[in-house]
Length: 223
Image 1 (cartoon, rainbow, N blue to C red):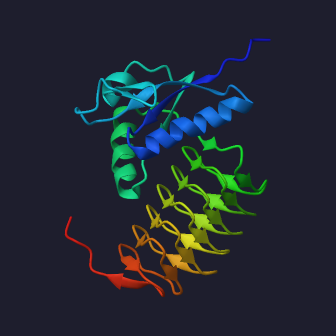
Image 2 (cartoon, rainbow, N blue to C red):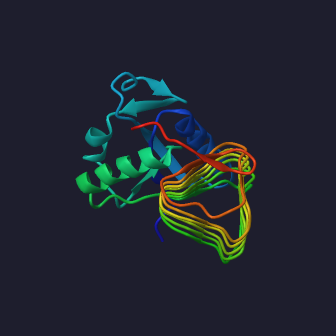
């Protein structure tokens, strides 16, 4: 029998979410030495070569070109769903053999019937309830809850303290703001943004931004 060796891990993103992900990995490793962080990847030349949370920040394409994917995984530590979608597309085009980690904090409550795809982060004090489905690269941030039978689309981010009720469907790359609430049974279209503290009481189309109680649409600034 081969001795157990932790998998190596690249963390993509040197911002706040990246630093929180370093802490998440540290918390996991306190219980079981599962991950060996190689470093943090970021495209910003201003931060490359510096240290973040004790790890070097490297150019992603240089580092990943030398990666052995048999023993290494990548995680996107990016809060913005749209940014995460763009970055992931570039990485997968450049490195088709890339393999992803999924990270679950020891305090997260995850139902045995939940289905979680690759590349997800489930942070501390979260709930992923019965028969929930999480797509690829979904972020469930601190204290957020996802109710039974809900489906969260690829690249979506459920931000701290958000409450997704049961039987909710969120499309591709949705951003559910901190402390917001989505009432049961609603369908949220792809690329929707729900502002912090909003209460969503009706279905939302794709590519919209809503704020307030009850949530109302606002015009988006041109991108």
